[in-house]
Amino acid sequence: MKSFVVRPAFVSDLSFTIRNLTSKFILRIRKFFMIPLLKQFFRFFSFTLIFLGLFILAGWVLVFGIPVTTNLFFNSNAQIKVTDSTLLADSFYKKTMLNANKELKKLEATYSSLTPNQAYMVINTTKNHFFLYRKKKLISEGFCSSGSYIQLKSNDDREWIFKTPKGVRTVTGKTTAPVWRKPDWAFIEEGLPVPPPDHQSRFERGVLGDYAISLGDGYLIHGTLYKRQLGIPVTHGCIRLGDEDLEMVYKTLSIGSKVFIY
Amino acid sequence: MEKENKSEQSVKPEKKNILPKILIGITIILTIIISGAIILSGISARKWVSGFNQKYYNDTLELKLPPPKIMSDPAFIRIQKSIAFTKSRLELTRVKPTGLSMDLKDSIVSIEINGVTVHSSKISKIIIPRTLRSVQPYFLSLELSKPLQIAHSFSTIAKEPIIVKTAPKDSTQVGQAHVPDTSNNMPVYFQLAFTNGFRLSVFQEDSPNESCPISRMMFSTRIAFKELSAQLKNLIKFKIPDYQPEIVIFLPASEAKTIYRAIPENGFIAFKLF
Image 1: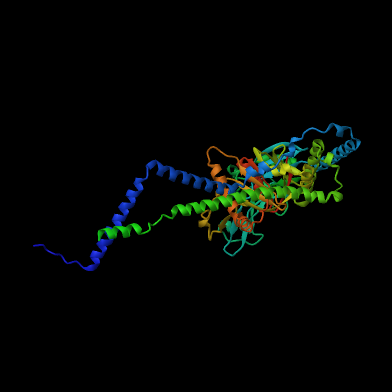
Image 2: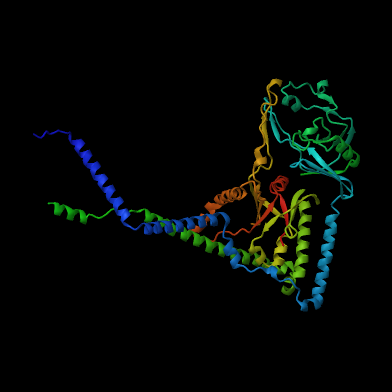
């Protein structure tokens, strides 16, 4: 006696679908392996290579432009280097060249006159380096500290950016044993209450070193207690120097001397 | 019955794989775009050269140009280039206190403030496009007798590395809100686009310890993508894209940073090309 198991209709449908799909899949795999392997590889590899090549070329064109065509299409004029002998005898050519030479010398003289003969100082705020010149010759160089580029925001919506101004400035004053009159930000930065303008807590002696050279607008070249920080941008906009360098700069620069900051 | 079933199966059309067709389609489109871009860029560069020369030929009467034979004389051109460069440097002092002078002939880039050379760096590698060598040299010296103004710049580092710090509420919180400047570790690449259409790309020298070519390529890709939409619009309209000659120089990283931070926004640069 055969026993019959009665299954619901959806189960038999599902099993039929699965069987159908499996057989199709097996058929495809068989078909795939009927092509010789080398042929498959060649077909796949060559196509991928062409596609990849074109893709890279497209990327190259987009990123770097087309240097090949630019170079192929143009002839350089820089190859002619000798003056035509007939020109050398031409009086108009001689006159033109003479005038051109005169003009060049005049322009160069004007340009070199712009560099001051007086002592001047150059400050590189990126590398925190200074250079001192006298009679257009470098006499001293060393580390300094310039503005930290910190933007301080106070709780009452006031803000300061501690950066050294770039460009050319003029020495407007020189003092020995300077006293620092602390501005509002010095207290705000320390989380301290801001005292009245002439309160004694605003005045501090010894922190600016032995000398101070004023560059106008409250910016100074002065000394520091924190010599380890020379070469690092840590100041509130002033230029800090080591003791010996400060003395040298103080003695070399006079009122009216230029300080070039970049 | 079985035979009939078999014949039905053989008549059924087989499903075809569409992937190769898509790939072929993409390849054809890419080929068309690339060949179009190659042809158009070549044409645009040629057009730029002829346009540049034409601009000055048209002004011949006003400029009182020397005869063509003298104009193409190498000795005369050499002096004219030096005159143009010095004129341009003098003009720099008038327009803005801080400017750059680039003597690509001697491979020197200098920062100048009011006519005083305050900093000089040696350029290690220079790439000048051939188009600039193809224009009439006398006309090029006329073009460069005035400093070029920066229209806009694009860089990997900030011009001013501002660090925002909130004031402490009391003295116990001092020193807690410090944010370090991370730009010291960034590779220095920047591109300056000038108002006359020239471009200057400054790249830091490749160092063996860093993967500079990759980061440089990333930087170039970012610039390319910024301009991609405009270039594609031109391509679609079959319009010749604008050619902008690009000068590329390589400098030590610290020098490149110093120079980028020294030149003001919309500043000026005096050039001596070759």
